[in-house]
Amino acid sequence: MDWVTALPPSGDKGYDACLVILERYSKTPIFLPCHKDDTAMGDRDPKFTSALWTNLHRFFGTKVSFSTSYYPQTDGLAERMIPALDDIIRTFCAYGLELKDSDGFTHEGCTLIPALELAYKSSVHSSTGQTPAMLEKEWNPQLPADTLRNDLIDIHPTASSFKIMLDKVKHHAKKSMEDAFGYAKQKWDKSHKKLKDSYLGTFFILALHENNAVQVEFSSELQNKHPTFPVSFKKPYKPADKELFPLRNPTPLTVPPIKQSEDKNIKKFIKERRLRGKNQREYLVRYKNPVHEDEWLAKSEIPDSDKLLRRFRHERRPQV
Image (cartoon, rainbow, N blue to C red; front, top):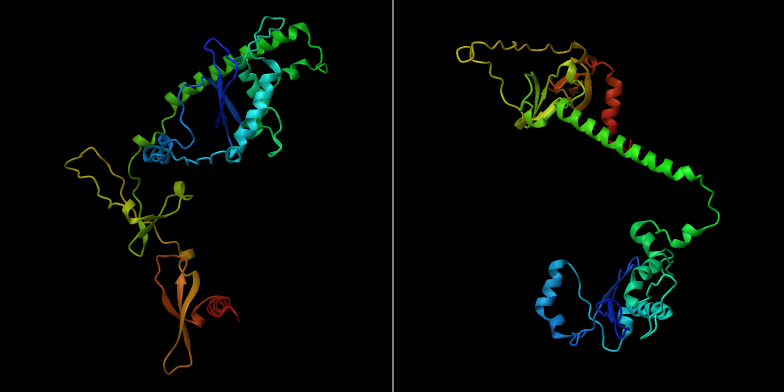
């Protein structure tokens, strides 16, 4: 940022200076009319270089970069913007002279600043190839010249009033739908997690995995849920005491039968061993059903043993 001073006084408050702020990435300008004070702090004034000022910027997450004396290239972005701002103001204003158009509007410096920002934000910058407005907001503002194009199609006189009527209908319909959905959500939506039961059950435990997780038997309504949970999410089932709660009729807990179809389905081989004194091998197998523990079986006792054996040896020696 930098200052433009020695401008002709303008406005009710007699602004004679302008603070120029530029965003480095999008080149978006901000022009703030102000006064030139009788006393001003220089670029390397002790108030700027003090520890308090440095720590204040560190607290806000900004980095202070001091310029070198008589070296305007340090802040070249603002230094290049200031001559352009001077040329624009000089085109419409003259020192000590107020130019008025046919409507009696006075072209003073401070009154031109909003239009100057709009014109600069709508111009393509040479370094970025885009307008500052496009880089900042992803859209270009509509200029007055866009409304004066001659290629606009003639509109029927009643079209504007019809559009106003449609906008009102759309607004009232949207408001009515919001009110209806709000009432429905308040009255009909009862799935509040705050009021749900803390625990769900009861479920029969099928297997314990390394003392950290358990596998439970789900009913048909919960078949799409994963059956394994941490131990911390479980607590023992305790039937209701009939003396304390005589009106309760708890559902008796039944142990589900183990599915026989998964009783002997082998998942993979884990190890192999040779029996002492016999020319025979046994394999440690793991079943798909976690209820069954790993056990040693001979090859003749294993269905589809050749396929499992090839997979087991390939995992041990993948280069073969």
